[in-house]
Length: 130
Image (cartoon, rainbow, N blue to C red; front, side, top):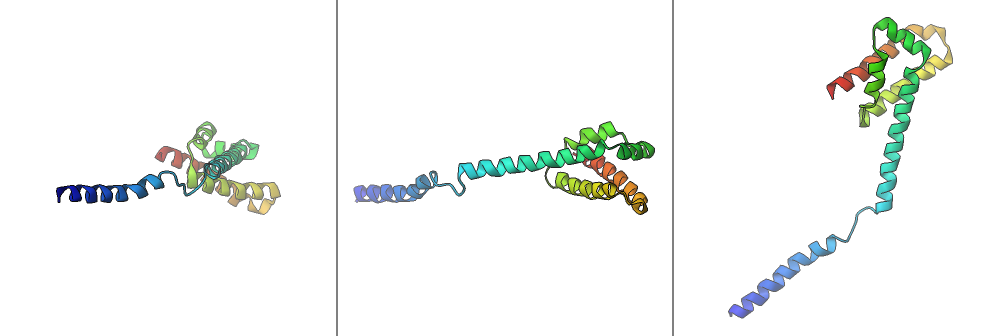
């Protein structure tokens, strides 16, 4: 009887361990797909950072920041600390402001100036919060 218990216990233990052993070899996503996803994210973050930095180096943005008393060096350094949704959100706002500035519409100068100041402050606040 004791021998039968050992055999049944061993069989049950093997049956319970078998799915775990097989699961180690199965992957939900392939390594190549995972590598592509990581590269895509890194690439998008690099584009977003470059967009923000290009905007910060514009002469009119520097002039407005100087009048507002915002340190462009701190803002530029803060861009490196932005990540994820914060980075993407700021980059989208920068693209919008850049389009308005590139359009040369003089009727939106006040709102564009406000957007630039708000963007600079948002960048600094996010950087300080981290």
